[in-house]
Image 1 (spheres, rainbow, N blue to C red):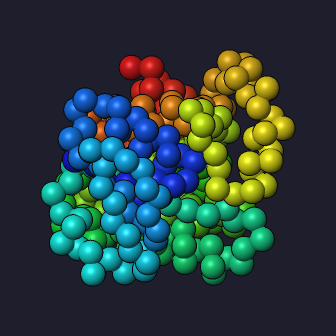
Image 2 (cartoon, rainbow, N blue to C red):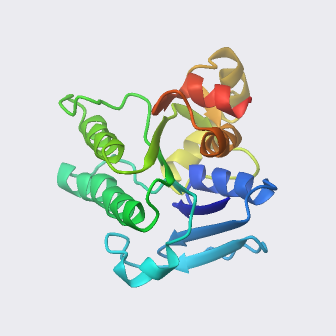
Image 3 (cartoon, rainbow, N blue to C red):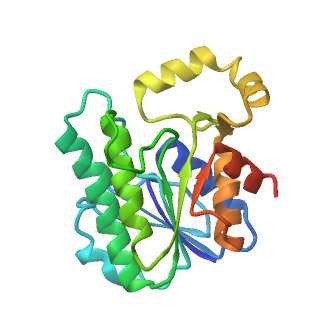
Length: 221
């Protein structure tokens, strides 16, 4: 498999990158982002591109992939709706539309979130916009799958890029393994999500939208 990752420096992105580099059937992993993160692995190459909403300058480097894992995004906390939509919907669709043209039929796995509103009419801003993004992806000529994780436990030294989340995870760290055991349909680890993404890219899944239960099932084989 030849894999492309958007958002490899984020918490979920770090998790799927780790699993890709460990997987024997993944031949090449290309991470695209605004800045290099300097990971050293013979499978890994990086594309540094500042304008993620316009990929025309790097299109030649985006062809020939089997799978894209898209976990690029921001927290909606404190953001105006227009700004959040520009990033969450705009950047995602810019990438997906480009890739659907360059790699028709490729598998595209988008990391959304538990509670997303598919009707696009909910009262919660982020849930509406995530729902609109999901629906647009499912209309493209891609094998698009949507992951909707809830609580995520970072493992293997992975940390959130958001300072507030890092503090919360540090405080809650002793409880997170217990929560994953006690609430298996609400909580996952970064390892679970990365392994499930690879499993779906290999075998597909009976549903296009995967909730926490589905993601755990795929991670466990």
